[in-house]
Length: 260
Length: 267
Image 1 (spheres, each protein chain N blue to C red):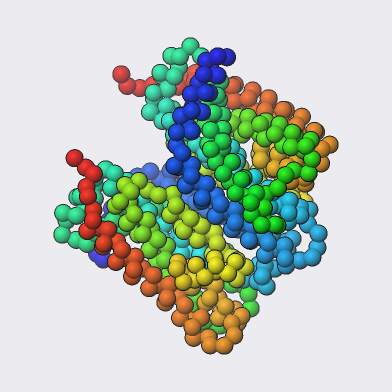
Image 2 (cartoon, rainbow over the protein chains, first blue to last red):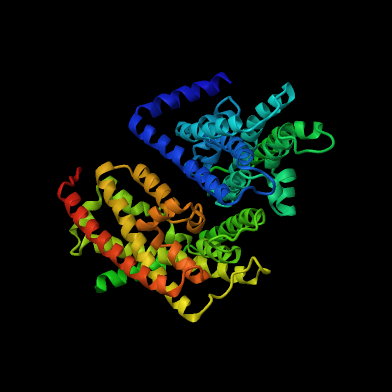
């Protein structure tokens, strides 16, 4: 873990050498999701609700997804941009070092400009929470706190799977975007508005539903019956990273270098 | 003129080589199309009030957006062109006995066109086969199809004129990311790709109509869907022409200025 922070501080300092570019990028990163939220806001001016959810409830859904997405983009970007490591043969260098591969790949790249996106999500979160009337108790707070890290783990897990595929394809695959960007877009809204098979896919296969839709059912008092399952849903999301790690290790074993 | 034409043809053929990438793009765009349709369906089913664009018309617009994404996206970029500017190899471009603006223009149009030609047919054909009400269908009349075709062609010319301004701005900023991001984000919003323009609040709608962006994508697609009548379409074609002329004049003037101050280093 110490090593990871070391990587982080070095890359942070190197990025700070180009301050203007960093600031501009962060501002840009702020505006990309900002307009997406403006669009949601305008849609709710015309339509009062979506599948029984109001603007503020959807905003909460949206902010959790985007918080998780921006954090994962910042910290696990190494996996997302992994194909360049393979292409240049730089992965060989990682393999010969006496440390784990996961931590080194993660440390190979950070996207600090995602802070713009993060700030935007926090603003939406505050906007939503200040307008919602929730009877908070310890369980609800805990559930809410767990939702974001769970999302970070899911996004990172998908990056890892995408990176693992690079061992065989060398090139990065655009298809992975369907799960990262697509998953992000889909989970901006509560999963209940989608088709049955999409709902199932994003609950059981790639568990985006567990980071906002299911726990929010509990927080917003929409759930009936046993509440425990809804509360524990984020933990199920956390577990998604376990199979991803196994797949990654399997991929590393099959790695053939491309370098000379 | 022949030089531009052959360059255009070459680029077109070059672009068509990347079939696998295009196929991957097609499947992604399908996913996106379905997702938007489901979201809007959920919105539309929440109210009985009549909207400025019907759900059926909106589906046509959404499928067209996905099929012609390469034509209408501002952030679709040509890295080769940017490298010319930032790396200094623009010196070679300047040695050529042709006008740089038209040269790049032809290149960019061909690139967008080849991308769109590869992607639009598979998407549209499969979208046609979907069950009602999700399917893509024929336009209300033959005239609206002709008008759609004309406005989309002019839209392509217009969007390239806008993107030329982005490339010229790189002469000043030397880094493509900033201007591309800002132009891309605002352009996407104002051309109705994030939220369809008919669903925007009235004040914003008026403002968006004053900008050039919507004339590239929103206009042709809504003509096809039958949301914009023939009379309005004819007036809009004149506006399209006006924007194209204005933007090309600005672009030519600006590139002239930028090239005067360009310094190429290295030997």
